[in-house]
Amino acid sequence: MTAPALVAEGVTVEARGRQILRDVSFRLEHGERVALIGPNGAGKSTLLRVLAGILRPAAGRVLLDDAPITSLERSDVARRLAVVPQQTNLPFSMRVEEVVALGRLPHEAALRGARPSDRAAVAAAIDRVGVGHLLGRDARELSLGERQLVLLALAVAQEAPVLLLDEPTVHLDLRHQVEAMELLGDLNERDGTALVAVLHDLGLAAHFFPRLVVMDHGRIVADGPPAEVLTDERIREVFGVEPALVRLAATLGPS
Image 1: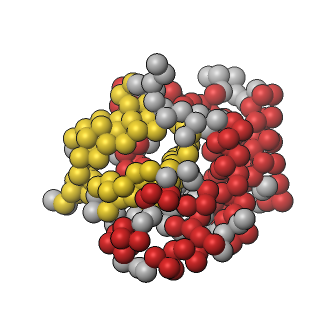
Image 2: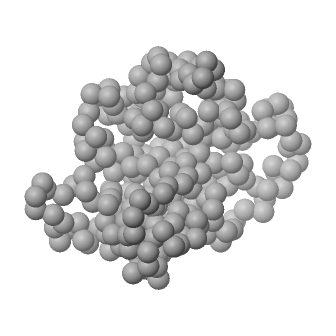
């Protein structure tokens, strides 16, 4: 039996005397596509950081391909798992193509630099995400939406079997939101990439993700297909809005 791609077991995270996550367990199978949804402060981004090995929990553990993520070298983690953060600050000037090429660092041989296969992977990622028109520009001078797409291209170039994304559409206009979601679907279905994305837009989440995990007050309160998870009662209880508003948002999504 194949081990799951990523597992969190009984994870608890504390900060300033407050529990951000409380005994959270989560399992991602190879080839799955999952959206983490919930109100602000529910713990979604914190769980994503724990899954990525960026944040060490006070209790519990994370397994990447059945190995404790804390036992793996960061380069080994990077070959297996890519992360697209919500925001990032570049410490110095870098052209767009140089940022995307960072995705190949886990694959490059020490002291030998980029190989033809690495350069091909970077070019393919730039083309696939559609950021070729940004080549040559300083990534620090891009709009937040453009920078988000460049970071997505970096993750695509990384070619990791697991991809974690923290609100990948937050800075994008409607057209680019849909295109980004379609790209994630293609990565999942055609390449077999396992995905976990934090999303606030329930319409996009329900339309593009077959499994939704609802978080509230640091716990997972529902996990399953959109039709089972987004019940009227749960939408009112967790999100504090009328279900009709969510249904309308979903119907306005792509057909």
